[in-house]
Image 1: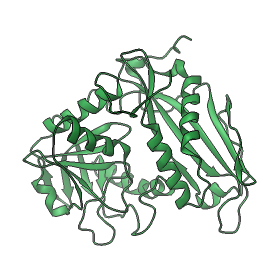
Image 2 (image 1 turned 180 degrees about the vertical axis):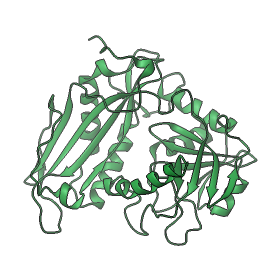
Image 3 (image 1 turned 180 degrees about the horizontal axis):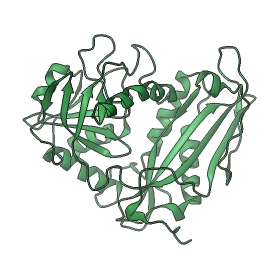
Image 4 (image 1 turned 45 degrees about the horizontal axis):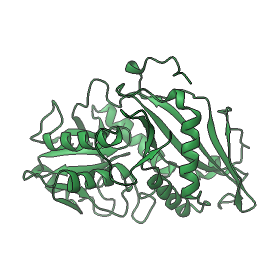
Length: 341
């Protein structure tokens, strides 16, 4: 099948409707077999559980064309595992991770002509999601659910290269203590919208959220984990029960230890330590690592020695190594690369 007619080199990070998507429905205590459909629309009753009580979860991952001619996905089993945990926390039926990987495979294969070519800088973004679909008026979990996957080709998250970001310490809390910060629930992202719009209005690229209990420890941004580099080239990542366990961060930690021979600490990070780090990055599926050049705490500027012009040297090594693994240029650890075709 020939590729669709898309200007891959100028592709933005937005939604383009593709040919097929996967749908499986949960009724009477069981998931059905699931199907691929060309219909991108969802019809729901006005009283559907997702509309009334925000019972919805999602994931995000990518498929790539490698230099060896394959189409692959990066660690989809971990996305399936995390989605199971999210479902349990919101009293939703877990979609089995084995079926999750199978559904990702089928969806990407059915849209193979939308997978950007190797070397274009673009990828196929995959969005699995689940929501309560039947009518619910009393406050309780839904009885019926839909699990769906769509995909869309996207360009590089940062056009023209990743320039260091300026972020601010937020006055808002991202998650409550013992809340839902450690799962990928839509309600967490809804909570962050006002904070990110406020940050943008004030000239900042993102927020740094502190722990909601004491507001003394670094947590994450609205959609990415932090990764710091010390002046003696040690990697430090914040650890907290209310941080979303990022698959990208987990992979970067492995790369740092096993590929680059670096020491890594996963621990609580006091905000007062931030001024002493040499580099800072935000870890996530969309950009892999977004470098941070400056943190502003209510007028007080913390400038990292790595500067505001390019990624720091350690962050660059981490980025280049992980993206090389994803694209098939560097040998991957066993199980990391799921070959679709």
